[in-house]
Image (cartoon, rainbow, N blue to C red; front, top):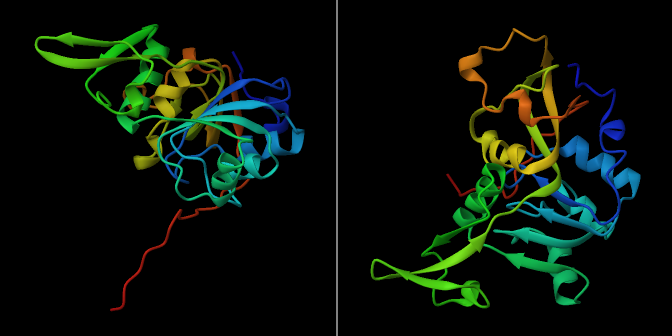
Length: 231
């Protein structure tokens, strides 16, 4: 039951070209930065990445964009990355934009084995183009398909050797749902503890969803956009 890998490089070594990945995080908070860096070093390409954000130019998923290892992004908010913008405009990056709540529910549904659901979000807009729209109780709903991935990369505060995970505060964000929706879930943790040390009532992701655990070597507490005003 020991799911711990020696390094991030070892944990992602079998991710092939063309794989579909989910990457937890919101902005630069709670992102699996060590696993992303290992993928950059490995050179895996042609990736489809599901993530709320696309990082910034020099950090997070922005590093994979800079080396053109991502073929397609399925995201909600991508406004902080000039590399993303350039690649989208020159046609080298395929983009599927999705309302944030819908994206979260598509991932949750994928992890729960629900193939699709209906939501009023996006009815009458570009979001609904090419999708089934159905009237239910006098209101229009658009059908959204669930999302799953070959690999989910998540970041946790604490984890044990069985893969049980605890996230800290807002760093929880997309990580719990993405941990359930990957065929193989790889979790990097800030602190590794022995089985039995985590309070079961505090575990956010049970180890049954996690196949690999790696301890992050270092973390940079980045702020996506710093906004200040004069005192």
